[in-house]
Length: 215
Image (tube, rainbow, N blue to C red; front, side, top):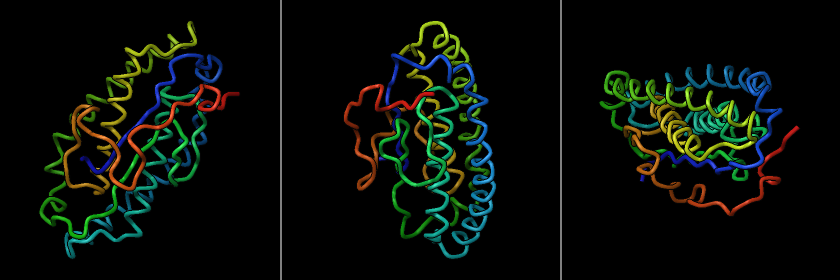
């Protein structure tokens, strides 16, 4: 079971044309907060890198901070890239009712100093695959933007690759934040469900009204 899980509820019908049209403007406040949060998280990851290389342990406070950033940026990306119309929370706490969710397993007792020390060399294939997935996500989101504007629907044929690409990018972020030592699985299905004690594998079905908070 991969230690970073990803879930996105398929809300395909009744999408908001208005918030979709202005999505990138509406996302600006969250993107600003995410940029500041991410800057600090990168510094925290560097500190964690030294800690792991010298001690083999990931400081729990830093781990929880970076896990919070991963949850926050994943929700913001889900909103920005049209996986959901629901306004994301600003913080990094778990939000089990939000349509886009990330589960992060607890830190390991000991980490590989070698894998951590050479992360940015060993992780080059992960970075290259993430670039491909980012292109797929961008293209599908652009098409989805037009589809929602004209039909108020997100076609399942677009949602599935968008969700898969978003899952890979979220796990890639976790990998380079040192939250896991394992390469992210390439396909969404290979990632499995949430680790034990985290978000359950399936969420109860909810009506679009309860999932979306539209203008």
